[in-house]
Amino acid sequence: MNKKEIRNAINKAAYMFAESLGYQVSDDNDGSFVTFLKPGDNIDNSIDWSRSQHETIVLNCASERTKADAKLIDEHMAPIIKHHKDEYIIHQIIKILPWMMKKDAHHNAKALLIAVRNGEITSGETYKLVKKLDN
Image (cartoon, rainbow, N blue to C red; front, side, top):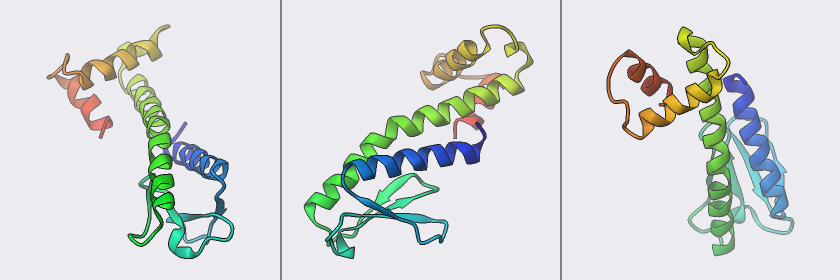
């Protein structure tokens, strides 16, 4: 998946989860945000989803239920976002590092990413490459 496909997959998962909580998804085509609103609620109880930051935004005056639902959406989305971003990084590692081009490339690239994140690899060109991709 390329970055656009990853963003689209993450956003689609957020829309589906919001719908499962009873929200209607409204897209005003501005490209930045999508609004989640339960039928019969006023706009103060809406949840905005940032398409680029992949997080919810609610007004301070929103109901406690709306704030709790926004938190639930963010919590639900966190592992989905992490998974998609990790897969992108792993594929970039495989493309960039020629020694990864073998049968177990995906497994090896994932192990490399985990090793850098866990502090098991802390220097060298490979470390610098993975850290750059992981930002």
